[in-house]
Amino acid sequence: MLLTLGGEEGVSRVYADPAKRLELYYRPKDPYCHPLCANRFPTTTMILRVKIKTRKKRSDGMKTESQASEEKVTMEIIGVVGTVYKFQGMSDFQYLAFTHGSDGSRISLYDKVLLTKPEKEEFFHQDLPLYIPPPIFSRLDNPVDYYYRPNINHRDGYQPPNLSSENLIGLSRARRPHNAIFVNFEDPEIPAEPHPAALKNWKKLCTNPIDSHVEQEMIRLFSIRPIWSRNAIKANVSVHPDKLKLLLPYMAYYMLTGPWRSLWVRFGYDPRKNPEAKMYQVLDFRIRCGMKYGYAPNEMPVKAKRSTYNYSLPITLKKPVPQAISVQDLTQGLAASSILGSKKIPSNKYKLKDSVYIFREGSLPPYRQMFYQLCDIHVDSLQEIFKRNDEAETECTERDGWCLPKTSEQLRDSMCLMIKQIIRSKRPALFSAPSTSADKKEQLSYESGEEEDDEEEEDFHPSEGSENEMETELLDYVLDDTQQPDPMDESRTET
Image 1 (cartoon, rainbow, N blue to C red):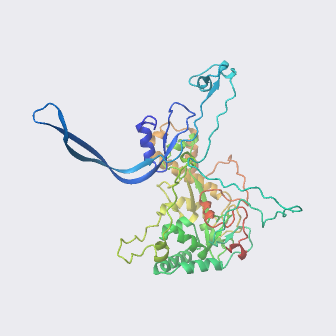
Image 2: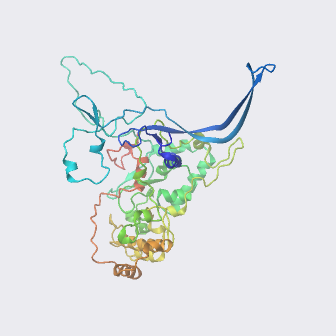
């Protein structure tokens, strides 16, 4: 049985990842064998070793044994089991690669369709019966009832209604009552106050001193700095993510495009009219990797936050779901001690490290793609790049904001060289090859602050923002996926 489960190594690999399912193959060497999947469950059971010793009695010296006997039972606890795998689904269909002979016998096709060694060209030109195995029979391994509805028979003279946006079922999800206000760079005006529904939602939820304290902390942050990213806020205020979704629309509006895209701006503050807002612009920085940079993606010390290799087919009986917020967290506060004297929740339970929004010299970013505001880049040489036109800003553009053209490109080049030097110091074996003229030129460019002239300028589309991880924050606030609402239209947020 252990062989059909993938061996001890395969079972250990599945056990190490709580999201994976244990697969049982009835024919491990058959690539067309559909596995039987087991789901993981926590348990509190014990493994017992039970021994039963039987002692039979003889009757008065006679050799024949009597029916009476003595039994002695001993038990020993070997260990405790905390996780079990249960096979609760169907094994589904098993597809075999065979054909019927002239006499009705079944002939296997595995030797003709499976490549076990390099073959000559004649192997691929042989005549074979049509064999197209299905990729999958069902996406679920448990029975599901399909409640089919019968066709509707209309009366004579029935005319179907005209299709319109009001009665057409589109590819949109349910509206979300977070009531955030979105602003594009080209919009003429910016909102001066939150939507009434956002104000009502937060006041309804803010019912304890802890929530009032969080609100005052947010007011203090936006008074010090009018523009914040959500990661920067989460690194300065300890607040539950579900509460932050309701508090942010009450404090600021969200920029969709431009140099402040994916940032939250204080109501009434227009960064397009204030040159001092240059220091709050966002920089989309991604660590470059590849052979020309000296290291491959899998050799980088910074791992990707998301990976497509961890994808599994949705055939689980019980999918892992995110932990839902409890009613106690929403009503009693997240940093308050329980009335019953339970363990006190730490005040910084939901705080992030400042490395999620601050770039420092000599330290690696936590992720391969980061979004820094210029004021959070704590490197003097980098600040000199975007401060070259301080007090001489003339125009705010959608691509460069209040900075000089190509400022973002120069910042990225300098930051990538810093990252490369850090990786070289941590993993010198990756850069053991002798330095080439290109490396010397790259180092000279970093030291002098110059930029190569032969670099082609990237195409820029002003109406488009970066399709990146940070902008998935929109999913928490967008009311309709298929239709972008007007940020100044108050009627869009009604639920």
